[in-house]
Image 1 (tube, rainbow, N blue to C red):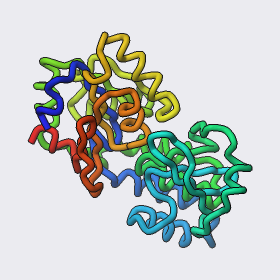
Image 2 (image 1 turned 30 degrees about the horizontal axis):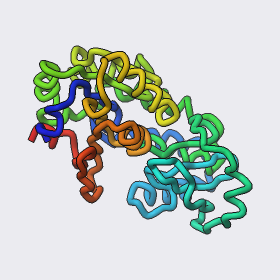
Image 3 (image 1 turned 180 degrees about the horizontal axis):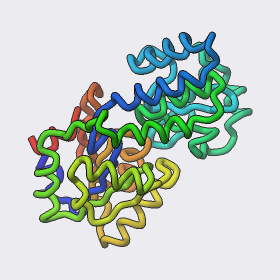
Length: 274
């Protein structure tokens, strides 16, 4: 893994699911949202959420969710082209219906069209399916919980020392959808608050990922092959990097290896320095 990073001048990291890999806060968020679901539907909500986590539901990380139509979309991660569309119960809709509804390229806005990139989005999508209007209050309560004594982030073994070592010869940038206040709290909790040369919060990935990468290439005067993007969301961090000719490290605990010249797959960031 070290050799994969040797030629890099710039390394761009994601935050959630990358620099920390805990998932308990997703369950906490899901429980708060369940209280907003109509009481007679809460059991169904919980069952759907548990099936999502187990990979047994039509809603899965790596797909997209059309809130208005309550449709689950399967995408080509490199082109974001829709390949299949399903109803909540798993029934596939026709190509004619796909062509009618999705004539323009998808624009993910985190409200009506959702890229299900990590565990935060599973309870969100379940809540939207069951008619919850306000998810933001529960999200904020979860973020507040994450900085209390009742919650402790698990520090990835070797991560801090590895980043300190990497910083000696590379420029390190953080690009995340989390807002600046959350970023500050999380980095301090992880003892990584002095690591990054440049932080891009509220990045609106995947919609703006390519734009961010292009600006970083120019700012740091790098060629694409001299930049590595590291993240746990293929659509958000990996596909845009590969399209631009960058290299990428995809963090996925169960994904079968697809190591290529430009891509390395690891189950955890701890493997980066192993």
